[in-house]
Image 1: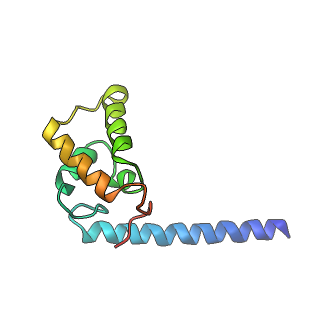
Image 2 (image 1 turned 90 degrees about the vertical axis):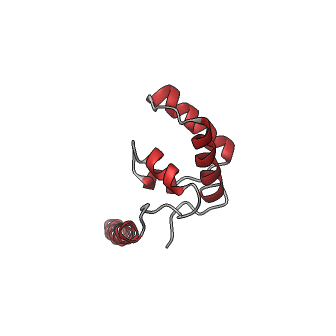
Length: 110
């Protein structure tokens, strides 16, 4: 019986993953900036972040402005990211703190 329950959980998990993947693909088609919230700062953030990774990495996060700032420092120091100009960095941090903070659900909705 436990094997059947495990199989059921795996099947449900796979079905959920397929549904989420379909929703993500649809959202990517709908928005100019993929899954990112279209608001002031989205363009700078989208192009600044997706130069190295998917916007999905960003939208799944929930960080304070200070944590986003620390993450940008880490990416420069440890990952070799080219630092943003200060004014662009502020726009990006404002955008991230507003739309991907600790109070926001970690999965994008449309």
